[in-house]
Structure formats: structure tokens, C-alpha cells
Amino acid sequence: MRLEILNSGYRPATKALFAVIRIFSGQSLPDAAKLVFYRPDFYGTHAKTFTHEAMRGPSAWSVGDRELMAAYVSKVNNSAFCIGAHTATAGQAYQDDAKVGAVLADLDSAPIEEGLRATLRMLGKLTREGTVTADDMREVLSAGVTRQQVEDALAVCAAFDTTNRLADTFGFELLSPEGFASGAKFLLKRGYR
Image 1 (cartoon, rainbow, N blue to C red):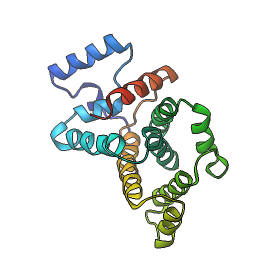
Image 2 (tube, helix red, strand yellow; image 1 turned 180 degrees about the horizontal axis):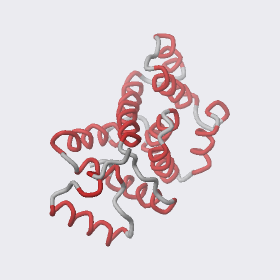
Image 3 (cartoon, helix red, strand yellow; image 1 turned 30 degrees about the horizontal axis):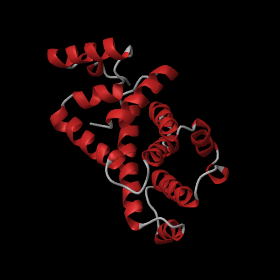
Image 4 (cartoon, rainbow, N blue to C red; image 1 turned 135 degrees about the horizontal axis):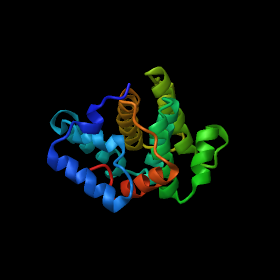
């Protein structure tokens, strides 16, 4: 159920900012951005900080890898808005839409390195079942992924399990392909701040 608050529940200065963004970008502000502006003290500020650190903080995973993780977790959660947003962003980050599409279509045959494949498989299980085992972790580590990379991937999963649920709860409107591409360009330039 889409809440009207996402359309109108902002202070005049925030509404003016939205109008300026629309003028310069040619696109309406996506609902994901609107949500962080609504009651920033309760959710937005904390969510932006956590998500930015998970997605753009120091990590052995590339930005493309982390955006692919976000897209994959979103696919497992069947969150249409987040699948579109992070598929576009991962494709731009890698400069390879086909690679991203292959992973989302069939993880086992996708042309990616084994460490990333094992990590995505583990994130998928965690997202579907809410738990992973020591054997799942040993499989990821044996594929050459470091403990720090596992922690970094788990942070991405936590951020997008939360965001996916909010997107679906608030009924985020799907963007056009041009809208997702524009949003991806913004995310690659500015991150999640």
C-alpha cells in the first residue's frame, strides 16, 4: 500500500530541493530518496550512513561487486524497484550489463569469479532462509574470499534486506529504464549520502 506521506509529507525547504533536483535531472526523485528525507532523524540519516559505508566504504569488493550483491539480494527478495535500481547501477559500474544479467538469470553459469559466486550463493541462502551454517561460510572462505570480504558482503545484504522490505511496504514506484539509468549515474557519482 503506497502511503501518501511519500508524496507530500515534507517541509517546504525539502519540497523546494525536490523541485530543483527534478529541474536539473529531468527526473522525479525516486521514492528511495524521498524515504530518507522523511523523518531523517528516525531512519534516513542512519540508513544513509550505514548503506553508504556498506556500498562505498573501503572494501576488497569493487563498487560493481557490491551493487551486484544488492541486485542479487533484491532479486531473491523479489523487490522490483531495487532489482531495477541496482541492476542498472551494477551494469554501469562494471560497464557490462550482460554480466549482471547473466548473474541474475543463472548464478551457476554466469561469467564471474568463484569467490563472488560463492558469496552471492551464501547471501541468497541467508536472504531466503534467514540463516547460514558454518559449512556455508567455509565454502565461501575456501573460494578465496577473506573474512573481511564476508563481513563487507553481509553489510550489503543487511542494508538491502531492509531497503527491499521498505520499498515493497511503501510501494515504491518503478522508474523507466531512463530513470533507473539516471539514478545509477547519481549513485555511482555520489554514493548513498
